[in-house]
Image (cartoon, rainbow, N blue to C red; front, side):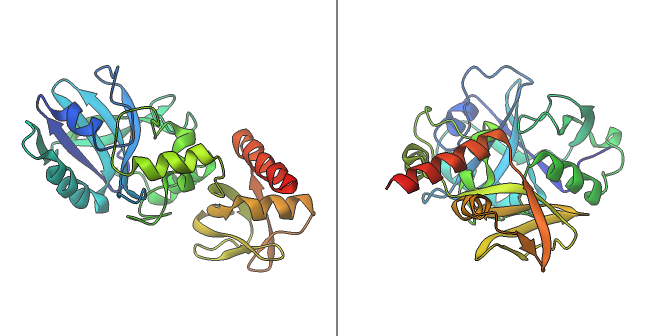
Amino acid sequence: MRFPRRTLIRLAGPDAIALLERTVTNSVTDWAEGAMRYGALLTPQGKVIADYLAQRTEDGVLLDVHEDAAEDLMKRLKMFRLRAAVDISVDDMRAAVILGDGHGDPRSTDLPGRAYVPVTEAGEPLAEAEWCARRIAAGVPEWGADYRAAEVFPTDINMDQMGGVDYKKGCFVGQEVASRMKRRGKIRKRTLTVHGEALEAGADIFAAAPVGTITSVEGQAGLALVRTDRLQAALDQSRPLTCNDQPVHFDLPGWADAEMRALAEEASGE
C-alpha cells in the first residue's frame, strides 16, 4: 500500500552529497546506503520551503516529498547545483510503500516504516484519513496539511526534536536564523497534539486569549500550532482551554513539558 500524495526525487552523481551538505538541514555524513533521514530546505530567512524523508542510495540520495512541493524543491536544488556533477529528476519508476510499524520513519517510531518499490508493486494509496489519524497520533505535522512553503520555522513543526536539523554541520541555507533561534533557547511556538469534540482546521484554541490554531484534524484528535508560553500560563492558572466553545486538552511529550516549564521559570525570574 502506498503513502498518499508523495513524489520521489532522485539525486545521482558524485557531487550529490556535497550539494546537500551545503544546502539542507539534515546531516549527510556517516550515511549508510539504505539509511533514512529527515530534513528540509529552508529559505535564507530560516523558514521551511519543503521537508522530506531522504534515503541514501548507491549513487546518491532519494528524496521523498509531498507531491505539491516537489517541483519547487527540484527547481531550487538545480539552482544551487551550479556546476556540480548531480543529476536531479523525478523518479517515477518507484513509489513509497508502507512496511508496517517499526523504526523505518526517523520522525517517530509510532509511524509505520516505509520502503521504495517499483510502482507496479506499490498497490493502492492508503486512505488520507487513515494516514492523517496515524501521524496526528504520533504528533507529526505534514507539509500540505499543517503548513506550506515559507510559513513555518523548523522548530514550529518540531523538526529539531525529530532529528531533522543538524546544528553542528557546515553551513546550510537559513542556518544562521535557525541556529540563533535554537541557541537563544526561547522557542515559543510548537506543534502539539490536541483532543476535543469540536476541533476544526483553522479554528483557534482559547484560554483567556488565543493560545494556538488547529492545523489538521481527524476525528477528535488534531494538531495545533501553539504559543507555548500562553499555553503554560493557562495551565498554571487552571484556565479552561476551548475550541469552538468546547473543552480541549493537549498531549504534552516530555520534551515539550520541560521546555515550557523552563520558559515559564525564566520569565518569572526576569
